[in-house]
Image (cartoon, rainbow, N blue to C red; front, side):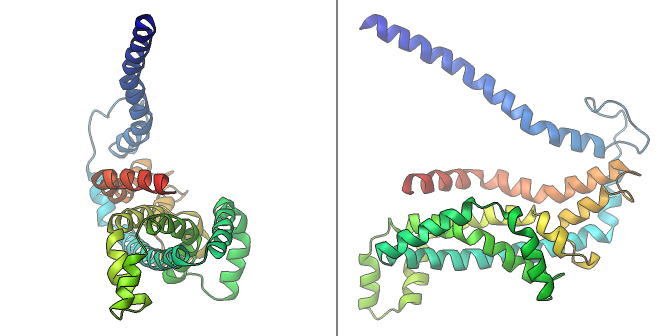
Length: 284
C-alpha cells in the first residue's frame, strides 16, 4: 500500500510540474498573433524587417491616422447598433422559449430539444445561399436590423437550450405562488423567473455580443452599402488591394483598434463567462 501511494504521489508531482509548462506554451500560442499585429501596426510603410523584433522607431501616428478617418467611426456605430439589437432579440426570445419549454409537457419538451440539437449541429454556411436569396427577395439587404434578426434567429436554438437547463433548476412552486397572487405568465416570467437568471443573462449577452461584433460572413454578403459596413468590414477594406497592400501598418492599426473593445470586455468579464459555461454544462 505504501509503495502504491508513493508511486501515485510521484506521478502527481510530475503532472504538476508539466501544468505550468503547458500553460506557458498555450499562452504564447494565443498571444503571438496579437504581438505580430501590434508589431506590424507600429512600423513604417517601408519597413519589411523581421516580425520577431519590435521596430527601432515606433510609429504611433498610424493609430492617429486611423482615428481621424470617418470609416472606422461609422463601422463602430453600425457594429454597436447591430450587436445591441442582436443581443436584445436573442436574449428575449430565447429566455421566453426556454421558460415555456421548461414548464411545458415532457413529450413536447423532448421533441423540441431533439429539433434544437439538430439545428445546432447544422453549419450555418450550408444555408448561406438560401438565406441570401431570401433576404434579397424580401428587400432586406443593407439593413442592420434585418441582419440582427437573422443573426439572432441562428443563435436562439442553442441559447434557449441553455436557458431551459437553468430554469429547470428553479422550483415550479415559485410559478404557482405568483399565479396565486394574480400574476400572469409574462409577469411571472419577467418579475419572478428572469431576475434569478441574471448571471446567465449577463454571460449570454457577452457571448452573443462578441459573436455579433466579430461576425464576418453575413455582413459581407448582406451589407453592400459602405455607410452600413460594420467594423469587421472596415478592417477587411483596410486589408484589401486599395488599402492594406499599400500600407499594411495602417491596416494592422485599424484591425487592432477594431478588436480592442472585444478583448477588453472579455478580459474584464472572463470569470463570469467561465462560471456560467461550467454551470450550464453541469445543469445540462
